[in-house]
Image 1: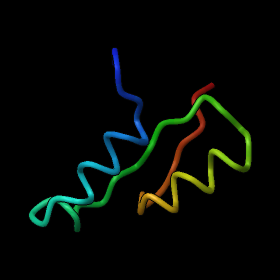
Image 2 (image 1 turned 90 degrees about the horizontal axis):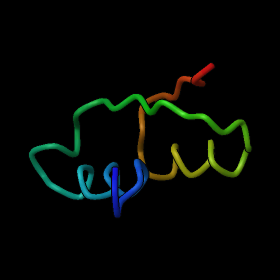
Image 3 (image 1 turned 60 degrees about the vertical axis):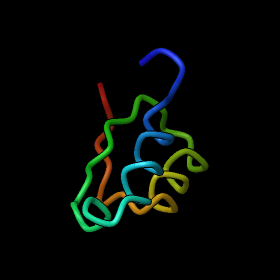
Length: 51
């Protein structure tokens, strides 16, 4: 996605009242613990590691 990453999309989505309660699963390429923590801090429901 040019100009925006998945965490930014998640943040915008969760900030909007009608969409804030929709469960979101993030697809990650990074195994870094900091990236995984950011996913949950942005209120994602789960994450899946991309092979």
